[in-house]
Image 1 (cartoon, one colour):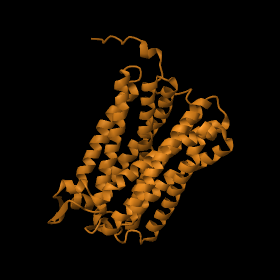
Image 2 (spheres, rainbow, N blue to C red; image 1 turned 120 degrees about the vertical axis):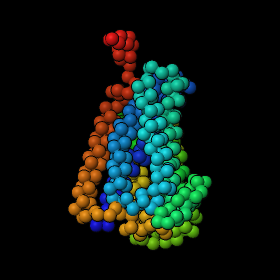
Image 3 (spheres, rainbow, N blue to C red; image 1 turned 90 degrees about the horizontal axis):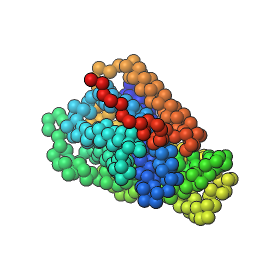
Image 4 (tube, one colour; image 1 turned 135 degrees about the vertical axis):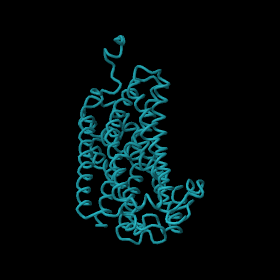
Length: 392
């Protein structure tokens, strides 16, 4: 039963992270495109903002539901964690909820419905605030996860942990190098989605060649930045992990996941920095059609690397849920039966799997249609019609 509960969390957590890493990756790219439009006034950057922004909105909307499933899991299967460490673990989760479900959603709503209504600078500020609150939410999630890896800033009081040093919680050694590593992973995931989609259109010679040449350039440049951040801070974490979890990668699954993650990350960095970036000169990358199928095949690799990295980080601390303080077995909710775990496993994985498929289909359809059929920010008669009078 314990293994099934662990598998349930691993599968649902991985599916949820697929949404998160793309959301975090696309948000700053969309904000950068809109900034370039405001500075240059070129219509192509507005079209890029709307097209890639629509893909961001699709992924964000469905990802919200996957996050709710994760909340249910803590209450249903892991009440022992809430009782033992809720006073510490719950605080960053509450701040993340405030950021994601209130601030981020509010600014995103203003950005979505503010096209052609808000002043341009204010509208641009909304997407940058969406980006900042999204990364603030990710930061608080990493604070909570790093506490599980290394319970800094807490001390036992009876049968539970209490927060004794908030500063130590925020400067956790397990956190400092992990946050920029995750930011880099998200950035190059969003960039490779742009690269793969642009390569598809360029390979098929669809009418929007100039649009996707610029999108391809943007994806390659920021993909190079993202892969460099990911690899650099990934290696930097080894100096932190050793002293606090010396046996972290002794587990075959954790060690294997780490090895393949390093292989994929290093490969993508080398390809992006030393092959794709130089080919941007004179638009050689856009003109070399034989390379475009290779770019399309590479699109899923950042997602694979992200899941492998998550597995290496989580599996490596077993059998502890709160390292050195609370075991996974002790964290399970009392009274659970194998039937209950099986039912929730099927339900949760079924819902998240369906959302993942729907997300892929909607994004694939949006990419296939191209920038000519984008609803986000489209001008219509309703934008210029007078508001109806209120009936009294």
